[in-house]
Image (tube, rainbow, N blue to C red; front, side, top):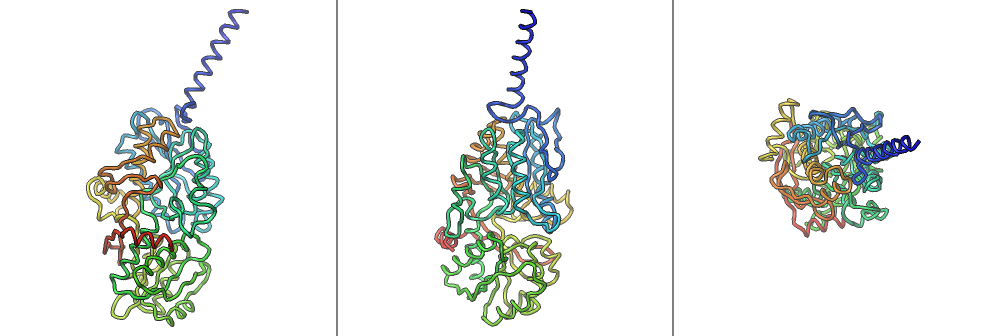
Length: 441
């Protein structure tokens, strides 16, 4: 009996030790990664030896008009993992791509974003999330991931631009950004926020001789309204007139009546704050139908933030998109040098067409996450700390630090013009006073 009790005790002790090692009691990650259990996620991708010990997942809209952009962003993440031998330091890392968009609309939904975040939080293999693209989805996921077991899950976005995810502004609601971080500041992004984009786009418009602009935004979309306000704040600071402001109904069949109303204001430019997916192509077509081409003598210029800066805008709007200007936070693929140019060349060989503007930033986000995991090992909380204190030197998108807010320390804005693709026209780095004016709206 004593022998049996001793053996049983030793077995139980061994099982307990295995459980501790298997779940990473101090870190929260399993010794062998398990796939996120969700219909929104594909299978684990891994090209290293043995099995991955940890996971990074991407959370992007893989359906609708953003499909091609998101596919390239995932390609960039995989290329970074392959280049690092599927390792972050001594930790082997797998990748799982997940979808946050609705099959019906191609847009993110609160239900999908919430379910995704809960699935990532529950799988202790997940140490970092690369995403989201849409800021509204990020606002839902950040606090859920921040409360995840074992210190939370780090989130590094290659595309979120809403100010209120990281900084306070009169446009912020619900106590954001502080309300997003109930336990830890688990979020960072590698692109400048909309205060920089609004300031940069307004500076560009003034440089083009625009004296008055009519501001349109997608109705029912807080992020689009926020972008409209940042442009408005910066434009006023620059002495430009806001000829009017209105929302467009994304379900409308025609916007000619709206455009005829704008024509009566004498506006020299129209700003479209929204997404291509929000019936943006029809808005562009009807703008041209009423006002004529976007370029040429006496033309009314068409300006848009990053929600329109994708190839699908040109494909869906056709010739009506020609000559429109669209801004993106950061640098376009053609402008990248060093590691950025190397990644773009690899992507070019893979996709064979135009490189989407956010693909390199997805690769940069993956580098930041992997760097943090490399220092922290299988520690969720350690990965969050590593992301928060990241210092990138000669990275894919350049040299920068992650500030205490979670924003990058640099804020260039690139304005491109539509032709067969979007071609970069000017890089603008707005001054702090203009960025502050944009933030106030």
